[in-house]
Length: 281
Image 1 (cartoon, helix red, strand yellow):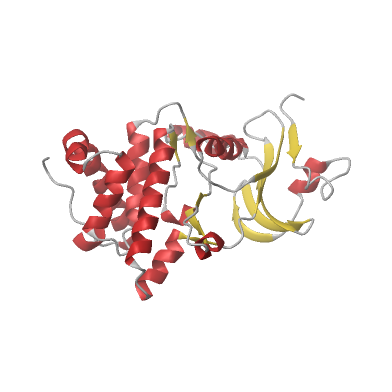
Image 2: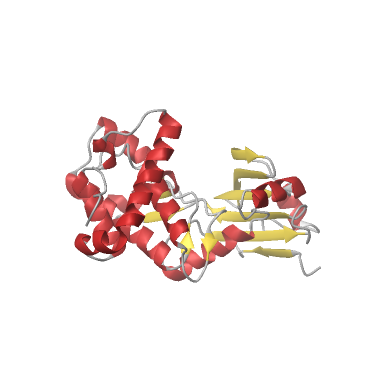
């Protein structure tokens, strides 16, 4: 059927062969990283190489209608993440390398699919790194370089029409082997909800930035750090940012504060927020 697809890299093909490779992949078991209704993420070793496999078993019409009634586009297969990986590669943002994809069925409610990506190896999420900083403050130069690398990643993502939809620092990872060579190399992961358009919508940009801002509130960033990030992310002077985008950044901060209160039941401190967005340019 035209709806059925199957693709594997050459190095995976010797490990996954037989009359029904699709069924074989969907039945694989391994280290369980996520198991939610309709979707499972496992880590397996195939041909001596570590891989992550995301198995989508079908979401059902109930889940589809629930998302639509909440004005959310339902994720019904692994194809969204496949397209996101390919798009990120085209704009120079590193992510998990694609090693395999398959789908079976045409109905959005019962379609099954899988995505196979190579394990990135020796990495640390920026969320885990920030937890370390709470015990041992980082070198100031390293923190500044990392902050600006994240700002460039975010700017390239959004300026290319993409929004992550879960843009928290836990989904940005640092390559520790590259760091040994004094290189800051970042990966953007967990792309199964990514929005892909020609131009990002203002609300999508705002929600992404609020998520990033909220998730970085425990990283010990100073007001100057926040301002450095903003200048590099927008590629313009702070005077222009405040003059042209003040209302937008007030929305970002307000939403980030709401997220913080929802999780912690208290308001963030001004120090965590890096100060308040000015009320006027």
